[in-house]
Length: 362
Length: 240
Image (cartoon, rainbow over all chains, first blue to last red; front, top):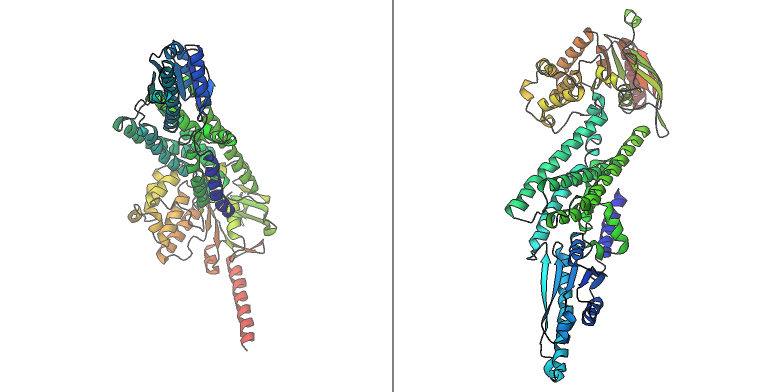
């Protein structure tokens, strides 16, 4: 364990360096809906394609498809080029491009907004200058801004781009999940590592009954702990909650079971309670940072993008974001439920195997 | 002899225990009968606690067999309902009060709640019920430990140094209750390291180098005295 204590902090530093290695958000998933299909609209789309921070990954043919792509988290930015765009620009008439940003992830939203602003200013200025030069004005004069294209920006799911909507709930729940993880890490070793374990062992109580009783107590306590937090978040602070409260509680319950299973696994793997709490600390904080809530998973190094899904925190905080901001429906949330259930099954199964192995060694 | 004509409450056959390559027990066999208190005498690190833990199923022997009331302890936990344990280590729940320990251990053992009240009276624990276990003195702790061991009305008590370093009143009370338990047909295996305690035993199993030799208490005391005497002589010769 001493070696672990030495290497885990070093590993943590490397992990964070790796996580934030991109330093800025590039390749923000963007979709363009071209309702005009003209030469002018294609040129405009090309300009967007060349933008440094945008990655055009989809060309939905309808507004409806764009909505679905954003709600499903596949796209963060949507640009809708209106009908007659090319003609209006050519004739120097004003036209309006709609830019939609997924406001549910503020890290993405603010970066996407800045990236779009950069492109739109350039495009707008170029269009204006071209129009003026075409009408006989000197180039220098024309450069004085005239913008025939106006851009309307809409932040969906978080229209006021309120940072608190995005961050407060996750920070509250992060503290809560860390407490739960640490408490769960005592599930097995908290008993077997104590002298009172002799009393339990001598009493003849079934180990299955003991495990279920203790785990149920943990899980119920964790759920009771989250209730005032949700009350504070959704009633007092009025944070957005798009889904049904029952659905949120069900999802939270699955998460609680999953982190309890991870804690139980840690608890089964170590030889004393101190090591269990150390291990709990080592996992609780980084798992939140890696959950993609503070730094988008798509912006992480490719290998890390896959690894982060090992942690139930990733399933929970990603799913929580969808439920509270978008309420995308049961089918969409199914992988998130499944991710948490699979985590629980795997971790509990390994814990049981570890315990059986230890019993055999005794 | 009459005692031994009936079936033993506990029967241990050829117990061996290794910790790594170190041999702790080397073919220990013993029986204990109803109404009998078998003392297990051993000095520090002679495997006394290991043996007692093995008899109650807390540790597994490397080889050998233990039967309690005919039940092979390797095959299920049913025998645990017949056993009460007082450990040498302070194994009660340190975070709980005296009353909570009684209540919780009764729940663990599936013992009737009515037993709690009578044991509180028997061990004079009324004044300590709301006190945290880690704050009561050693004598009260041991009284509580034995009360907890008796919650399930066992047939066999396994006691590891139950009266070591405690006040005289608690010693007296504990020994009186053990005698009462034996007189009602229970059996007891009593680990100790002070030979003076042997007077409370019916037989004494002397554990040394992983092997056990069973003596009558007087005989064990005599051997112990002659050992002390011989060491004193050696010291005297050296002094001369």
